[in-house]
Length: 175
Length: 146
Image (cartoon, one colour):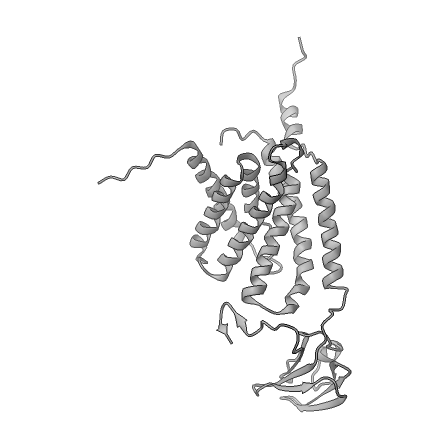
């Protein structure tokens, strides 16, 4: 018996982008961070790129694949780290979708990559923070850390927004 | 005939072009407002809840509770010596401890539910809590119900 799959061009594109995102995620996890929870989040650049260029369906598939496969490769599948990663990814995509929804007919008025990146990074850290607070450290003192987290989210979100814009500017029609 | 463009410069300038539109500016302004609000709310403002009892834990003994509404001095014997804790008007603080760094003393008054300080050399930790503030500390996803 032979299994036969037919794949479309979209599938190849998602696979390629997910592979890129997974590589970035794993390379990034090798670097130490000053505070647990703060990392550059460069894998999010790929998600943002997918969202802006191909729409939320592609971005959702790519980011779910990234979270799942990189957790399997790093050995954190179904651990707290995985839950935090998943919640951040889902909430950031949901808020990107909510921001885009009123402008879906008017592409001209949509925010550019920098605006989307700010939204994505802030909602990512908020999602992670709420899950961490609700499930893992239910202590009100944890909220004293939130301003620090949001400050870093804004700075690193601007950085990833600029990188995403540069990625969109270059000729990527081949993907 | 148009003059021939220099291809390298063209691609470079278009690659590094960063355009920002009105929606981006709105998001940026909202972000900065959020930052101010978060700092103001969580760092520079006293929380509204009032603590009404003190939990003291010495070494591995069971924690002991004291009400915060009556003024008193607790003299506790820790591993290194004596620690003195003052309770007054809904607040509590270390006023003396038998340790070198005196971090517990410099921490000052504990008044908001959830505030905690400890003298690690002397193995004494104190925390102020409230009966009315919803406490979720007995649950976490790793250990289940504690």
